[in-house]
Amino acid sequence: GAVVSQHPSRVICKSGTSVKIECRSLDFQATTMFWYRQFPKKSLMLMATSNEGSKATYEQGVEKDKFLINHASLTLSTLTVTSAHPEDSSFYICSAPSVSGANVLTFGAGSRLTVL
Amino acid sequence: QKEVEQDPGPLSVPEGAIVSLNCTYSNSAFQYFMWYRQYSRKGPELLMYTYSSGNKEDGRFTAQVDKSSKYISLFIRDSQPSDSATYLCAMSGWTGNQFYFGTGTSLTVIP
Image 1 (cartoon, rainbow over the protein chains, first blue to last red):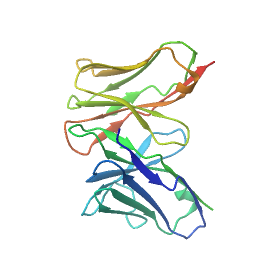
Image 2: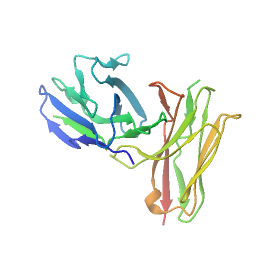
Image 3: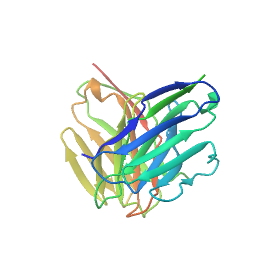
Image 4: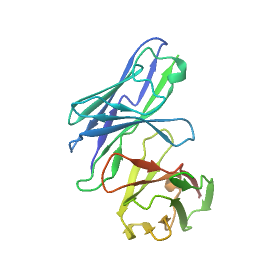
């Protein structure tokens, strides 16, 4: 089946630094990718929709200057958390529509960010 | 009213039991119905999906969709301790970038 590879799986950084998370579709092309944030024992919260070759679409309340999204190719989208603060600590997960002819998502394994 | 409703549980069953997980929805435009399994600190894993109404079976898992009642189910037969996880339902339309998720049901299978 389709695979979405997400790295790093865990990252710890100091407050004020920036962190980049990569999301790759390994065996299919993804013109669109989605970035979610998940708090402990809570459901997925859509942050933004990443579109290859154009600007990302951010959900209401998500700071686009803090969460920079780049969809540089049909297989790679990146999320950069800029000037990270402890409140940015969370589980970030990317996904992409992965089944040809079906509107179905495959998720990456997630990235746990801890900001000290 | 939320687009998708899912009982958060927690649900606890003995090993070997049949588990029934359910979601209801309000939008009749949904066409694809997905079930995901999420282990702690991992991303959701696609278990199966169905298109429109009907049943789909994959090993111990059976997904059912009743569009007339706007109700979907996932059945797990002969449940195993390794099935202990949170199960998310998700739905989408024919096309587009809108996906709607349930809040997840936490399942524990006791050996």
